[in-house]
Image (cartoon, rainbow over all chains, first blue to last red; front, side, top):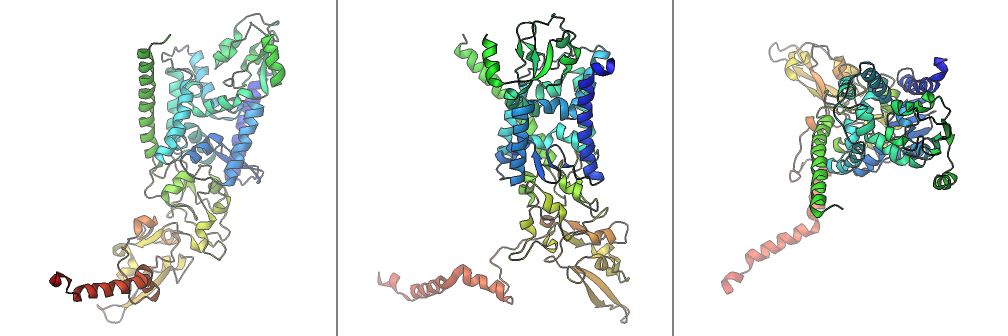
Length: 271
Length: 257
């Protein structure tokens, strides 16, 4: 069954689109489930949720933010830091749909991209955003964030933001594969950093692995797959988005979602 | 082993890379937040602090019952992602429960800004902008009867008053000219929305664009509270100084030396 085979992809799109729809409904039809956008939201008219990187930038720029933002930022920080890891990128962020579409086209048309960017660049961008905020006197990345432009344009109306999104789409197709999400986006870098120790991780069973390399072909962050075919364990890198493409493509039952116990895992790795 | 030379080159490379990125970024960001003529929702902090504080979540836009508020997009000069309104399209209807100010989680819209102690927050204290009249296109100034802005004003009779002036041309006609009182006007823009001419003759500007500033050595002698400033500024010290000046003039110090 093709449908069942892509169950995680379908689930991811469902989650991504549902969240956007809830925000959209909150804006246009007055739904009380999610009001705001991915920068800051109000869940069920009571729970604040905030993008912790945005909150950090505002604090760095020298403004004491409201309590709602601090609490909201902390909630999101804890959910991704302890539970979900970098799942924001693959399961929530709408830019992921743009990037995936670009890669799909890229592969369909067999376009070779020529610019190799260092995947560590995003951490530089992450730090630069926090350094520039106090210099400029406002949240530096939030002012130009294409991610924020995208979700705002979906939730509140398009404006000229589509041009920026289209530029990123073209960049991903022709210049660097997965260029924005995998190399430049500081939000991805932020969740990679805090997601290092989360408990939901992909687990690899090397005994079942036949080294078919299919997971390497579908993974957008291949550097995280260093243990494949070598030894059992979790895909520990925070850069893994838990997108589950590798799980879907694996025909040997060598990859599954699993809950990691940090302490047990550490001893296992040495053994 | 990296030699000292390699380490220095590497450092130089990192610094230049960050520099090029940072400078491009800084310029793009400054352009992105430029919004010299944006009108903000009630309770907004002053320009710089507002830009600093606003996290661009759009909750104020979502709760606005009249769809007045919109979020800035690239190229519209309203600061990307921040809320603004265009009164000629949809003015602020000054909800008495100020939902936009109340929901703001970041503090960019602050109830304190519309609160005059010891009162409760009151939407009439909002200072979103200031109505300005272009006399040459206002038909009421021509002498034709029109009180559209006066009637539309939610603070009718205080924020906008009508001034009757007798026509010197005919001697028997009069004109009723709208006058904006800037202490009271909230900048909601209902007047601009209501103005009947093609391009509104009364329109809202951000307060800092529509107001002057007087240096504090001018004092309104006819205004008791303003005259207090003299006492506050110089106090009893002022009298002493006067005395010493007189003493100085009357002393024959220079001659006696």
